[in-house]
Image 1 (cartoon, rainbow, N blue to C red):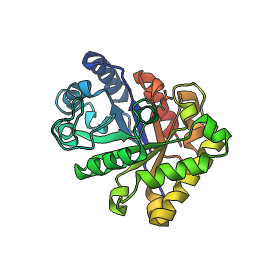
Image 2 (cartoon, rainbow, N blue to C red; image 1 turned 90 degrees about the vertical axis):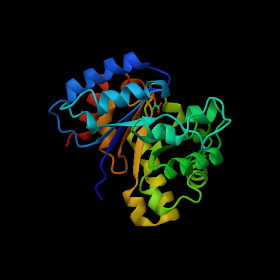
Image 3 (tube, rainbow, N blue to C red; image 1 turned 30 degrees about the vertical axis):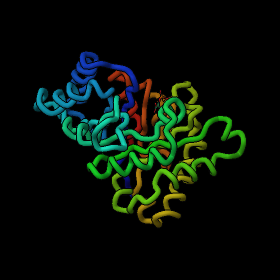
Image 4 (cartoon, rainbow, N blue to C red; image 1 turned 180 degrees about the horizontal axis):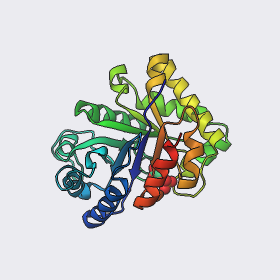
Amino acid sequence: MSRKPIFAANWKMNKGASETEDFIQSFLNKTQGLNLAADIVIAPPFISLPRLADLLHNSNPGKNAHAVQIAAQNCSQYDSGAYTGEVSVLMLREFFVHYVILGHSERRSIFGETDAVINAKIKKAREANLKPIFCIGETLEEREGGKLESVLKTQVTEGLKDISEKDLSDIVIAYEPVWAIGTGVTATSEQAQEAHAFVRSLIAGLYGSEPAAKVRIQYGGSVKPGSAAELMACPDIDGALIGGAALEPQSFLEIIKNGTAE
Ligand code: PEP
């Protein structure tokens, strides 16, 4: 089963509109003429989405700008109304947003998002035809306590509760061991492959072997240009979700290039 790899930049709370513009102009110049065999996605802060949408859809004709797709870093599980500080899926759609990162470990640990909230957000995203990048992963304590599989099983089962097989086909799973996010410690390719294969087996148990073979599972956690090739060569790893190393156009591009080299 060949799955198109997907490389997504999670800028977190970095880059306002002008820094977004600097990045995109440089990234588009560097990628001009390249035929990268991957989906490329950038998730800026909400406030930078309008500028990113304009840069990719209006201001750079002929620069292959449409090859870059836009993600939000979060969305509300509600449609509209008295939810101060929230952003709805329909608001995101106005800015050519196609993906939304949900369940990131920072949303879980800092903002208290539960599996049930993440499940509600995945459903809301799908109602608006947004593609969730659904993040899961264990803490170091959980891994060392022998709880890796039970943690992943709960996150997958609860996060995807009542999600149809059709909707699953528009969901990307991101396996991100919490101990590897922003720490400079990358999972070894063996650790990552083992977890990815386990997640795929969970999906097979829930949906059957064909949907499991099709679902894309990204690895995230301190991916760098130097580690991309080995990780992406693993049979169950289908791209990367990248934080720190995706803040620089050259390093993001090198990860994509190294991760897609035959
Ligand atoms: C992330 O935030 O999803 C991430 C993987 O960050 P980093 O690449 O910096 O570890």
